[in-house]
Image 1 (cartoon, rainbow, N blue to C red):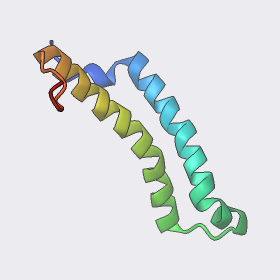
Image 2 (cartoon, one colour):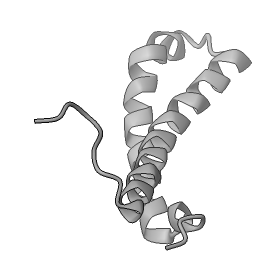
Image 3 (spheres, rainbow, N blue to C red):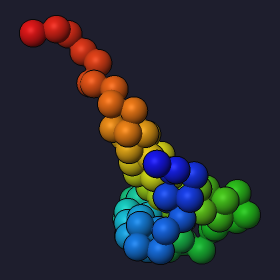
Length: 82
């Protein structure tokens, strides 16, 4: 199974993009809300806000691709033996 194009599929990308926007907006409000309300947002703050939205997009994408690769390879969960 080829996973190189899997994260770019429309259904997956749309869901993760929506997740990133919602979670990113919440985090921006928590972390930068005071500066936004005071009107003290500069270019550095804008970059930080953009990264705040990118992280919730990247984390589930990378995690899911890794999980699918692990599943496809038949690698079992590593951990202590029972």
